[in-house]
Amino acid sequence: MPGLFLIDVHAHLQDEKFSEDRAETIKRAALAGVKRIVNAGTSVEDSKRAVEIAEAFPVCLALVGIHPHDASTFNESALAALEDMASHPGVVGIGEIGLDFHYDFSPRDVQIDVFKRLWKLASDLSLPAVIHVREAYDAFFSAISGNLRPDKVMLHCFSGDLEIARTAIDMGFHFSIGGALTFPKSDLTREVFSLLPGERIHLETDCPYLAPQPKRGKRNEPAYLPHTLEYLAKIRHTSSSLLAESLKQNAISFFGSKAG
Image 1 (tube, one colour):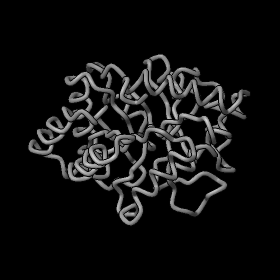
Image 2 (cartoon, helix red, strand yellow):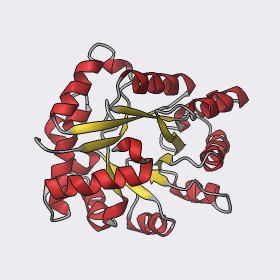
Image 3 (cartoon, one colour):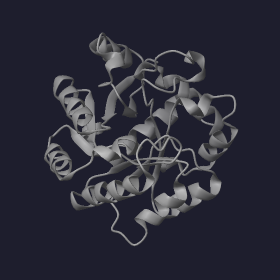
């Protein structure tokens, strides 16, 4: 879309699925109006690759973290490595971190312990935290209760209901959504994102996963973000251009001027 300045707030261009055409993928994104891409780390090594991409491509920024699937890999040296990477100029937050009780690839008690450590890291470093929660919102809210919070928190690929959303709104959290917004069975997600405060909403791809409905079944990539923008504009009764400008300001407010 000509004239757009979209920010993909959560991607994984370091994934091996982009190893053959990463540069071309970034070029396609720019042509589609996606001018910034934030790549989220899922392990120490994956976070390093996200930082390397931020070094190689000025349009890219990085988050460093350990995904709940990989929580069992956490140790003190991993924490030290993430803290060191967090000082890199291309790093704008800690993520993705959180809890996933759908797959339980790491034991739940381990997930909770690691999440608390990384939540504290974000708070100690005064960096935004980008959170993955799947079928674990009760445990998530319990884990953060009574603990210092990072200044800014984003619930990525938000899948909660209206009650969960209201609790998170009251805590000052932000929300991002990607291709799932466009899926035929995502009525609840559309309802939630039609009602969220406009200044708390962000768009993501989570690529290479969750391609929007018009591209369903294909490898997702940032160039597909305008499809989700159109859906979001429709449910919020606004134009894509006005919404894009609002989303840009939201991302800059959340991640800082580097996102602009």
